[in-house]
Amino acid sequence: MTNDALWSLMPDGTRVRGQVDEAILDAAKAEGVTAVICNRPDNEDPGQPTAEMVKQWAEARGMAFIFAPVSGGNFTNDAVDSMKVALAENQGSLLAYCRTGNRSSNLWKLVQ
Image 1 (spheres, one colour):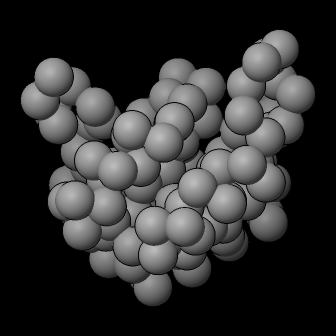
Image 2 (tube, rainbow, N blue to C red):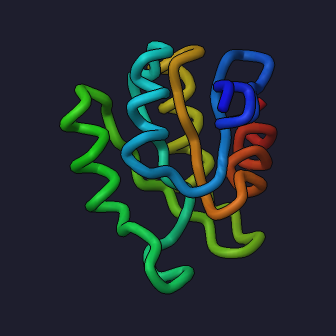
């Protein structure tokens, strides 16, 4: 699988995708990702890794982790502000994820 199939690349270099796992984080780290932002609330689907679990995976790889969940179409000011800060602090080296990548993409667009 090529990295193009792993995520969508936004114009500023931010990577956006659905649920991550350790292999995805390894690939992201290899491409210079320095931070992961989770836009997926815990317990959205049975069996999904919790934000705390993904945080541990990210931090074990030397990446920062930000939890800014978005439920449905409710893009809170906190989530928008968290994305804005994450983008500013990790220009071109941020991986944002949710269940499918749509909320993360839309959140990225709201910040622009």
